[in-house]
Image 1 (cartoon, rainbow, N blue to C red):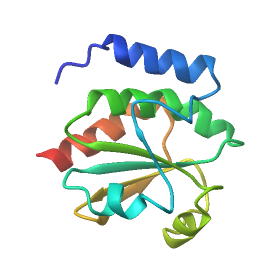
Image 2: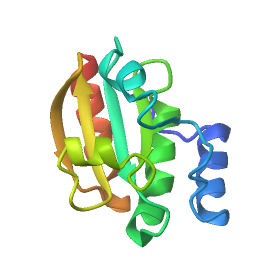
Image 3: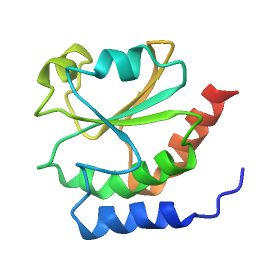
Image 4: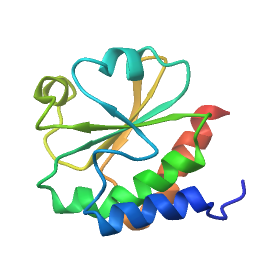
Length: 133
């Protein structure tokens, strides 16, 4: 897979760095209690959900990597962000006790979860690549 960054990827990274994370918009889908089932559980594509909160420094640090993955996998996978303060019911249902947490879903089922770090973007790419195969 070509790993050259497109203009959209650079824009997403710049947005995340300069605007404190750009958590309200980006190349990903914002999910909450009202659309989680439709966007995540009923998706016919692999889904990566970033569980985050606005007050979370590490969440802002990993935001550029999440945005970059969203751009790179557009059309092949869904990358979503869920604010755990706004959707506490979903966070509780999935046992989120530390953020950021990324959970990968396929066919409505959890496949894998981990606590992402900005310098481990390949872990996110590799998992999505594996799910798309």
